Image (cartoon, rainbow, N blue to C red):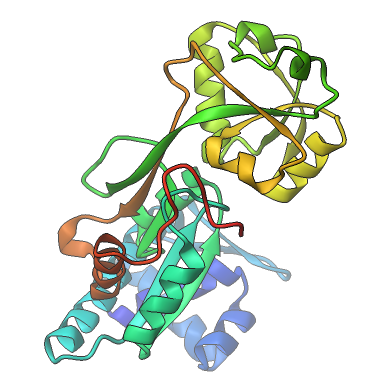
Length: 304
């Protein structure tokens, strides 16, 4: 099995189209098709279902994709390790992050990294913590800053960044604002909530807290960005339970402590592959963070 066959296979799987994949790889379409056929012959299984509009993975193709991505990531890491031994850090740093993550100022950290390692190409992807964990484990990302979604495995490990309690945000004219006291899950049971997609760390934390308290809740307004959530709460369309540092992002809203929910601790981590599979660029970024790179304070985040 040749590496170029795996590279071609992954490109077609990503683009779901032979022509687009060939253009991206800068190879002929006939050469790309021949490469895929050679891989299918070697594996004795069809990898794609081909139609006139697009191609989709077969069951065998889906099984191969995760392994192919992991192999290519390890090969890339090997090249970068050799370059690092020679005194030059180069290659690609593929980083993922949730929005407004606590414990690190991502833009400032990347700027400091680029000044130190100008030959490394930086790629940034923003997504929910669940998706980011999957992409690091599959080798598509070198590391990610995210909410801790699981215990460490043989494909994924975590480096703690910070943790903080969850806070209730509401409009100053909301009925909850009149009391001004700490709230329990029971106090919020009948409220309309604004929240993130279920893949996001804050949503996972809040869902776990209410489940542990045995209290149901209605998420009527679901968003995929922080500022939309704050806008909806600011219009008194619902309340939100968010990490405490969010309170600094919209001073017109009232922040009330959430108590009696032992699960409501928002812990952010750097997600990485196992030590042996961690790229030199990822090691350098984590080292920069651990040795005083740009980070947000425990009770506040950079207003990005």
